Length: 107
Image (cartoon, rainbow, N blue to C red; front, side, top):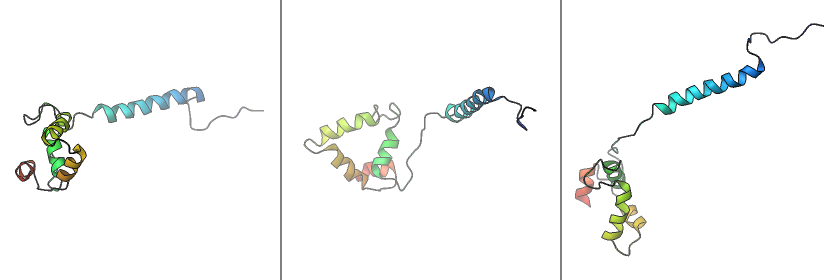
């Protein structure tokens, strides 16, 4: 009796798994390794909360709120005592003024 051979494959079964893992790791590294910090402004149709968030993020990028978004909620709580922060954010989210500056003027 002759031994059966795999046609078209020179790798043994024990070598295929590490090769596949290496290839998957390489693809993942290329995909994730090229990602950086995103600096993007909200588009015109975005809500004013979107314009505000993109204008003050990441932390340290704006003198308006040097701490970025984490600094915004304590500011909202101090400015509107007794009002849930979510209610304030929701009302701002319904305004679509077209730009960060226009939102600042509207609010």
